[in-house]
Length: 69
Image (cartoon, rainbow, N blue to C red; front, side):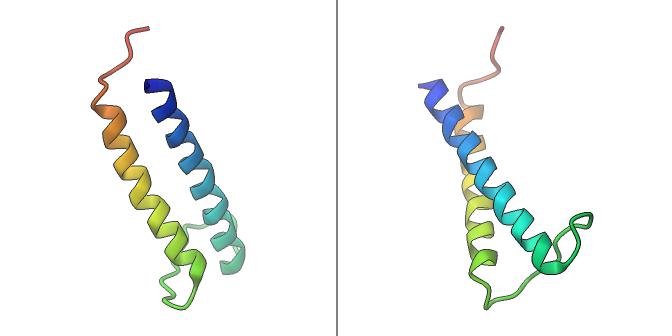
């Protein structure tokens, strides 16, 4: 069960990274933080949705407690 939740987190992180990189390309700089707040951009909304999903998934994993390996 823990492994499946960890897998979901990894998938969300990868998706967020791809969307973040796309926003950086649109902004014109891969070395600065994204400052986009465009309400017309579908990538902006996808990135914000994944960001909220990441926070939620992180809370799910925290309920398992720290691994003791």
